[in-house]
Length: 397
Image (cartoon, rainbow, N blue to C red; front, side):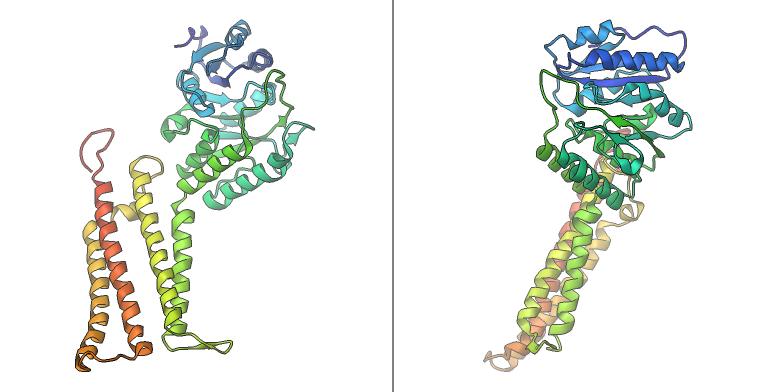
């Protein structure tokens, strides 16, 4: 439940949402700064405190300084923000922590960018984006390794021009939030918002800000370096089948092709003759690589159907029948190759075979049968995924 919204004579333009869990030391000054910044800039706004079960009087302090509160029983940074945002009334939303590390007097810079019709305006604390980190405001590992590396990965994997992906102070259109269907209840919520915004083609801008030392005295930060860092990296992998499955699979398939090209004619490399053992290793790489490609396809179909990512139309046109036909053709070629050796064996009265020769047929044949079987089964699984009902119409797609 929440307190009554602030009375306004005109529609609320900006909702400032702060997650809170026992922030009595700092929540008052944060709310006061946000209210003052909006009043001085002529912004019709509200401050919403999303309380995660505080027992230190944080809610009372926030209300006394001009906020309304929303009770959020589900613990977690993301859970608090999602409930707070959903209870807000503004056309735009600005989120920021209630620990006094972000200066809410900087609100006008965000609203200026939002009024230029950007979907999301990200704060940037790092010097690369013009920001400033005051002494003692950010742990060494976060400043020089965690934040820069994770932000670089976002730019590399998702082509999102953000220099400080972990910055918790950002503004965005409420319509963008409604479109993204965010789900992370923990600290990775902020990263999920950035990634999904990029995947949905949202327009973005950055505002350099100053990060101040945490003002809390009673307890330390809620962020846990390695736990939350791993959750963020895991989120990157979930939202990028291309990097998680497809590119490693492609590399393995390329390795398999090189192995086959060298082993079939028994090429010598640095004096060593590459023979059937190389062929076996190359086949293993090919099978693993093809499995990765299939997983990339299935996960991308699933993510699109679940609304986690925009649908990829090329994958939507792939049919179960096409995949099964490909699988049958590959398996048939493999069976023919194996059958050729069986026929030779029969011709020799099931006597001894020249393994260096016969294995050059059997190993590729077995590999093609396995690939054909994998493809056919994955195609059937893709058909299962595509049978998912639409959440809007409840009609099979």
